[in-house]
Length: 477
View 1 (tube, rainbow, N blue to C red):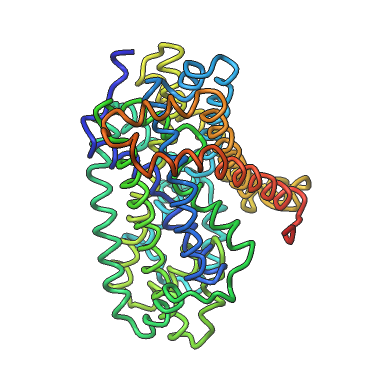
View 2: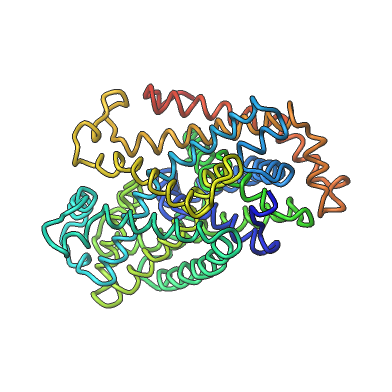
């Protein structure tokens, strides 16, 4: 186990873990959920969920990983016994499932970056039609150009980039790449925000995003905020247990987790501050209601934003649009790295397999598992409308299953700490690198949250998601 690798220090761990948390959930999912749930009021709910629920769960996961110095399965087995190891396997399988569809969406973003920066995507008249054709353009072998524009190739290249980085190990691969991508991500994000705020009608977007309307607060807003916070921070699937296992005993877990949470939250916040001024600018240009655009759901960044970039003109639109999708690619890549590391760490730790061989084997397997999601957007009718899942497509089914597995995994993790491993053992681990922890208010807050608040809320949320997604009970509460 001595050769499994470690982060070089606190900064490397924080950047890698923040990179794991920052991803498509921040740039793609957060803005459209905020648009659907009243803007500022959703942001407020999201921030409360991060502080009251997600931060304690993050601390718990990192503590488990560092205490055991193992992968997710090995950590639960070592600290709780063989039967608890199955919870680790559950998280590993959840990570594999998430990466299988996540890589497909990341491939879309990579293709959009190339098509906007070097192609003619912004010249299309109907971006909705383009997106529909694009996600069904799996592979065209009739020409080299057709092959180069294939969605299958984009996703394959993205998975290969992920595998190359993970195969290089903890310090030379994961840590080194996130030290480059995370600062670059912030620079691009802030640059686009500055420009978007200069556009006509942008201030209306800022008002929608930052001035809460309490009349918009609904139970569904709270449920969506909880789901988004949990998904965004990569909790409940063993990623932070795995990263925690590479962390030195000298490092302060509670403060590191706080910085990671703030980094992830800041990216989501900035993403909204970038998107909503752009949305209101488009509404001004087209003389339509901004709410119609902001509530467009998942197609927001693939249909609405390209139209916005088109309105900026050929040169500026290409530059801003290309920069935006490069930002999305960076965010996605930092997350696919952590998702791939979870099953890789399991096979390296438990099966004593060679890292480089395992990385490519697992990457290929997950890529193949993602093919049904890739062809479910219309290419194969049976996967486009699942009879057992209310006529939804296969990719949506896998994405919804991910929400369920994460909340269940997080709920069981808190039960594991409070009922099996023991709060006192978590305290002992958190006290390493933090001399004041035992007398701090953070300790009391973590005790209350992990013992009672988190398991109850996450258990309730899991039931709500299952009833909503599988039985169509949207107005359950």
